[in-house]
Amino acid sequence: FTVTETTEDAYATYTGDLLVFTAPCGSSVTALLRATVRDSSVLPGSTDSGPGDVRNATVTFAEGGTTLCTALVGLLDGVPTAGSANCTVPLAVGSHTITVVVGSYYAGGTSALVEVANPTGSFITGGGYLEPTRSAGNYPANAGSPTDFAFNVQYGRSGKNLSGHVTVQFESGGRTYQIRSTALESLGLSATGGKADLRSKANLFDVTDPTSPIFVAGGLTLQMTATDRGEPGGNDSLAITVWSGNTLLFSSDWTGANTSEISLGGGNLVVH
Image (cartoon, rainbow, N blue to C red):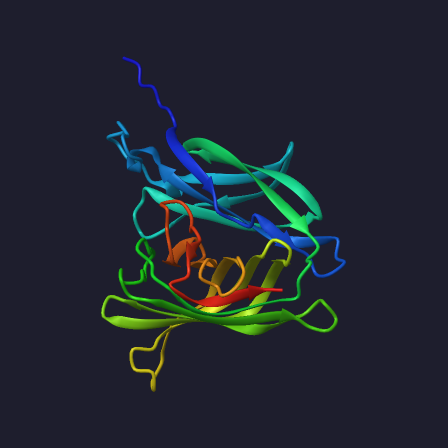
């Protein structure tokens, strides 16, 4: 008899940087490339009754015929049918077509446009709250409870160094958690379009007892995108994601593959 071995079907979604800004007058920037990889068995209407383990997949990011980097897949939340892979690469100012190729025990792929530009703004600031209904990760916000945020990040006088802070607080289960930015890595601002893209290292704390915060995890990656649609802020939107490597710790609105911006429940944000 004949045994035929074939690869598992993988569905890839690009979830890395889409709009990245250099320092003022810069010519390149380090971009974070990331993809979510899902086994076909988890998709609606799937007829795949034999799910695999996406950790047996590899993800290669390429531009044209040039391989930029290759990364292993780590599980999003401990379930072997959904994972994430990421790596960082330098990209020059301009538009880049990034191809995502899933290989090894899986086959699949996707592509995305990543724009690298010089910033036209100098700071982002905001305060208020979101009302997530699709929060996800190891520490998802309770449905119906507010996710509070406060941030102020700006370029220094030289136009190269970033300073400021981001704080996010939410309830998960019977605990209250707080995300605090540490090393600010990248801030992209388009004042004319009201768009901002922030990436920072961050720590996670349990602040159920605010007088005695408990350190939960450090060295995390905080990603935040925002759209300022003018005053008084009722139409502004925000997306917040926190990763520990390839593990999703927190998403303010998880679509199954990435974090979507949602309108503020209250407050305001300004991109300038």
